[in-house]
Structure formats: C-alpha cells, structure tokens
Image (cartoon, rainbow, N blue to C red; front, side, top):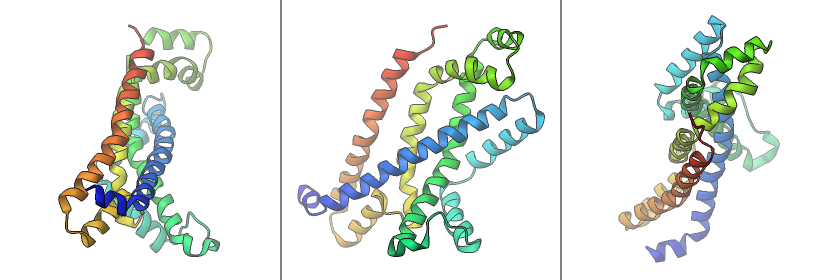
Length: 228
C-alpha cells in the first residue's frame, strides 16, 4: 500500500486536488441555484412555485450519471455548446469536460440544497414574516433580510451533509473523462494487481476529505444554531 502511494504520489495529489476543485466550485453553484429555487418554492407567485417544484422533482429523481453524460454528450457533442475556448489547444477538452462536470453537479445538488433551505424557511415563525410585510417590505426584501438569515442558521448541519454527499458524488465526473480520484483509481486497478490496497488508498483519501467537513459543520451548527 505504501509502495503504491510513493509511486503514484503526484498522480494521487493531482486527482484529489481535482476532486476538491469540483466539490468547491459545484458547492458554490449549488448554493446559489438552490437558494433561488427555494425562494421560488415559497414564492406567492403560483407559476414560480410550480417551476421550483418541477425542478426539484425532476433533478432529485434523475441519476447524476445521466445528467453529466447529457451535459457532455448532449449539450457539447450534439448541440455544440462549449464552456471553454478552443484556443486552449490540447487543454480544451479536459477544461470543457471539467466545466460541464461542475455544471452538472451544481444542477443536481441544487435540488437537495433547495429542500434543506426550504425546511429552514419553514422553521422561521410566521409572525416575523408578517411583521416584515407590515413594515412595507416586499417578498424579496422579507426573504433577504428576515427569513433567509435565520433559515441558513437552522440548516447548517443538513447543508454539511449535502456537501459531503457532493464530495462523494464528484467521482461520477469520471464518466465524462474528468481526471479526478475515481478515474485514477480505475487506471491503477488496470495496471496494478493489488485491488484491495488501491481501494483502501482511495477510501482513506475520501475519509480525509469528508471527515473534517462533518466536524466543521457540526461545530458551526452548534455555534450559530437559532434558539427557539
């Protein structure tokens, strides 16, 4: 096991760094998109509520692999939509696939972020929203200044769980050729005989990535939890 780590040290670091980049960029995209969809789901506008509900229903029940393959093959290969400039030369396809992977992971994870935030919105007492409306605040202002700050504090722990799931889901990006941990693991299994040791190396790598995340979000939840 240690011999494998020493021989593949550089490749392992590059692969897990790619996993970290996928996770962080997708987390930002999912948080922004998920917050928008959550706002739509509690909107007083029926059409917005319907669109938000449809988004969550569709993407929570669609396999992530299908979403990523559709982004790469459907959007890029079939429709010709590119997220990277072809002037990058040999770096064009890896960069393009990486950005499509971030897009697909963000879209998929946003559905789960939306439901977590919506559950936090439901914990905010109705009287506070009514007080905001009585002061003349619009729906958007009420959501921004009164509801969402409390909702986020209520769902820190659930959002941490979503982030951990996103870290593990990033392995699906190997399906479209993104050079992250799962793709390197498959290549190592093809060239090395010690499958158990390879599996242990990557399992340990993901534990190192996800365990601190759980501790940090658990601490944040205790520190900033809204007392009811």
